Amino acid sequence: MHIQEQISFYLYTKLYSLGNLLFIVLGLILLIAGGNWLLKSAVALSLRLYIPKIIIGMTVVSFATSAPELIVSIKAALDGFPDLSLGNVVGSNIANLGLVLAITVILGSIDVRKSFYTTDWPVMMFASLLFCGFIYFDGVLQTYEGIIMVSLLFVFLVYLLRFQKTAVVDEMPEDDVPLPLYMIALFLGLGGTALWGGSELLIKGAVGMATSLGVSERVIGITIVSVGTSIPELAASVIAVLKKEKAISLGNLIGSNIFNLLAVLGITSIITPITVMDQDLLSKDIFWMLGISFLILPLVFFPKGLRLGWRDGLVLLAFYAIFVYMTIK
Image 1: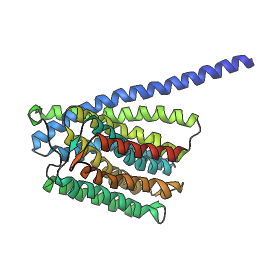
Image 2: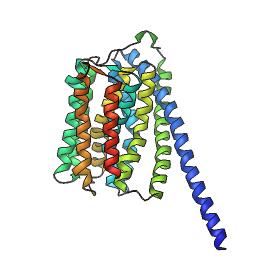
Image 3: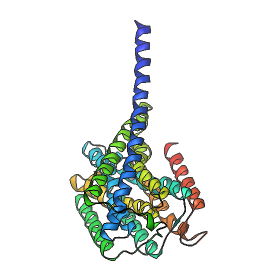
């Protein structure tokens, strides 16, 4: 009987691992398909509304690719796992720049224009500093602070739609394909749903593997879940770069970081205040987030002005690798 129990346990663990691996593979397939559909709808919407693509990237695409963070954060906070909620967003912002943007610019350099450092980057830094200021001193993100964050996001979106100029050079405007409105809505819905479903499967598989190894809630949130919820940004951005839609790629990442802070944490804290449980999040993680957010600006100017290239990608990737190592060691 003892041998039978051992065999049963062995088979169970193998099936459990295979199940998690299947979730991860299916999740990645959905994310790639969703990124492609979302990109089609974003380009078509930009053409139809005569709006610069970076604005579509910073609004429509960013909101869709930030949906997994929003869902995970609200669920985690309501279920009593605030560190998973906070770690997910802080880790996602670090992963968006240190992993996703790094891979994106290694695949193809991005030329940026003045509005990147006069509007987009400053707003991302302001949102990061505002969040850190709200949570650092008392360790709680209160309801009224969430209301302030969501209100500021609304002001930023209005500004974008009214005044923002193109911040990235469009390499191949002639290959843009206009689509009828119902097709735009269909691709947008399919893309957003596929990204959400794919991230859910990926998180389920990744967290299943991590928890079986006894990893802490904060570490799971700041690494595995954050990377899982950043996969939509990675899928959308890599597909955008491969199809020469770099304005959507960069706008998606900057916009996603702004959305993650002002919308995801803002809305979550309005629903229920978020309290920090693990102090490492305040003493370490938020400073890593501020550091990599600031690092983007000098990388845009050096070594070649107003361009992010493969060398910058390697710097960001190294930064992210050190962050992950320091977090899990």
